[in-house]
Image (cartoon, rainbow, N blue to C red; front, side, top):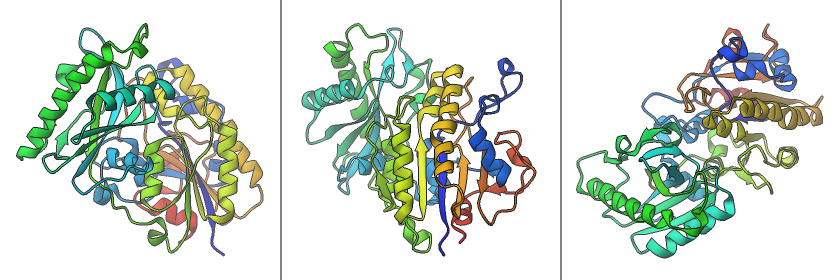
Amino acid sequence: MNRKAVIFLADGMADEPLEELGGKTPLEAVDTPAMDSIAKRGVSGTFLTLPEGLPTSSDVANMSVLGYYPEKNYPGRGPIEAVSQGIRLADDDVAFRCNLVYASPDGVLRDYSAGHIDNDTAAKLMAALQEKFGNDDVTFHSGVSYRNLLVLHGKKFSDKVNYFKPDSSQDIPLSELPLTPADDSPEAAYTVDFLNRLGALAAAFLASHELNAGKASPANRIWPWSPGRRPNLPKFSDVYAGRRGAIISAVDVIKGIGKCSNMTVVEVPGATGFIDTNYAGKVSAALAALVDHDLVYLHVEAIDECSHLGDLKLKMRAISDFDSKIVAPVLKALEGKPINFAVLPDHPVPIKLRKHTRTPVPVAVCGPEIEPDDVEQFSERLAPTGKLGFLKGDQLVRKLLEL
């Protein structure tokens, strides 16, 4: 019998000890009986999700967790999200993730999400940008909230562009965050020049747009980053002996990884990528997907967003919600069934830094054939003491599917 499995992925949950929590991390300070039960019934360890030499971003981290080896296969975040949105990229297209951000009048990047701009307002602003500036060279595409796309068309453009990740660059002057060519080609230099000119025009346009009037964090700039060309990831079934995988997420970057690898991407109405997401809908979707799939990847974005906001209280609430509204009901519904479970973050986002770090993340795995170790709580401090050891690459998924 093929072993089935569920991965509970809590985006950005790992953290560092905090003085205000008595030396505990937010995960350690929150009551998380469901995640703790996985650790208590199984084995704990750590996972290297952000290899050196690659961006410290969620696309890299989640590709790592799924065993797709971003060291070999990373295409850039822009094209992954383009696939998620059904945007057909030509061979000479370059897709950029394009945040709507807020920069203060003194020229400092203050908010990578423009106040977590709502979907409707963001879509209208992206449509306005397309109407004003869209042409044969560039097109704008709306996504979820601040998470949008910009696509450059033509051989004169390059994906060899150095950039700064916006959610890792808050409170830094714009002058210290320039786009620069990543090689000596004339195409790279032209791409940077084109985007700089477009960015200045877009900033003037957005500053006077009626939808930004009176906002504390208006979407007054575009922020192109993580460019790339059409992806070519291996199929999940090819990597894992014909097994079928399903992904449940609110955000395009995770759904895009699923579509690029021919996993089933399950759309959940009301999934927002924040703390107001449809938790119950995600649980129902996961249980339904498990009927005819071997692995279900249940991703929740909210904790990551709260971490980037630097809001400790909100991060702890999001961790509690993940445990009680995602992990607990799935475990209860599948109690007694021969299914393996894993829980882990994709990367840390220390609340004091408000950005991703490369520290290996805690992971716990349990299942019918897994003999427990002595770890009884899921935490950053205890996970390295467990018998699961240090994982990377496709080791987690292979263990869960018993391949």
